[in-house]
Length: 191
Image (cartoon, rainbow, N blue to C red; front, side):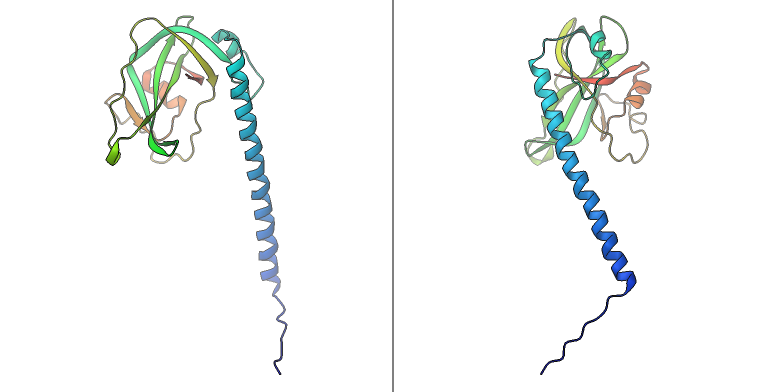
C-alpha cells in the first residue's frame, strides 16, 4: 500500500503563482488589444485608399487619430539627403526601407517620404539605392505616423556618418531634423 502525502505549498510559492497568473492575464489582454489596434490601423489605411486626395495643409489640420489622409503634394526631392532603415522584413525577405527628404512647394517643414522596401540580394548583399526623380514632382501618398522607434541603443548614429544615404536601425524625426538642418514634419508620406 502506497501512502500519499499532501504537501502544503508555502505562502511565498502561492504568492508567486498568483503574481504569475496576474502578469500573464495582463499580457493576454494587452495582446488582444494590440490585435484590435492593428485591425483599426488596417481599416484606416483601407479607408484612406478610397478617399479623394486633399492638400497637405488640410491633412496637417486633422486631429482625429488614427487618420491617415491621402494627400496630393507638389515639390522637390532634396537629393542631398536619404536614409536607409536597416534590418526590416517584408513578405519573408530581409532588407531595408528607403526614405527621402521632400520639400513641398507650399512651404512648411520638410517631409520624409517612405520610398518602399528594398530586399537584400542573395548572401545578404545590399542592393544599390535607386536615384530620386529630379525636378518638380507630384506625390499622391498617405500622410501617416513614422515607424516606431523601438529600442534606442548607442545614441544618434546619424551624426557619426558622413556618407549619404545614411543608415540607421530606427528613424527619429528630431535626429533627422538636426541632421539635415531643417524642420521635419512629425508625419511621413507613404507612397
